[in-house]
Image (cartoon, rainbow, N blue to C red; front, top):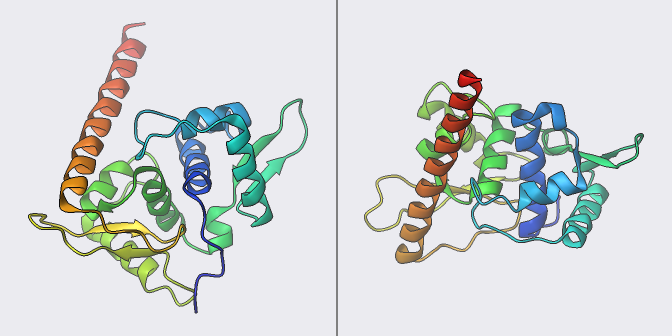
Length: 204
């Protein structure tokens, strides 16, 4: 049985991933306003590819995700706020939803990379735990949500990609190498920023 959802656009999957991420990393600001969601989608760190989506484009993505019940608008207050319905609609556990969110935000990753990138969304005990949930998502009776990509020349591990935007295009080795380097730089920048914030908090 195929996944019943229509393929999501890159921006729609970015919106969904951002909502899941911010629910766990900034719970006090969740559900998110449109302005906060635009900022989250266009972040320069922990995103691949980096985007420059406009407010109107993000609003259109939200509207489509609401039609699919993947996003819910919270009524009340002066500003509309949005939350995700990812795990409920797809009927997956929180661990699997965290993996899907990371893949939507950062693109294809190995199980080891996913364990690191999911650290703030869900703490996996080890790489084999990540691998187990990925394999469950790939063998899902209701339709696979992830796929294991063919190993690239020189790579030690296979990477995984989500299928919410349709079948992913396999990158050329050169492009994949560049993407991997960019992901490492992005991850290091995020870690440095987190360390700076922690030092500032301790010193105040």
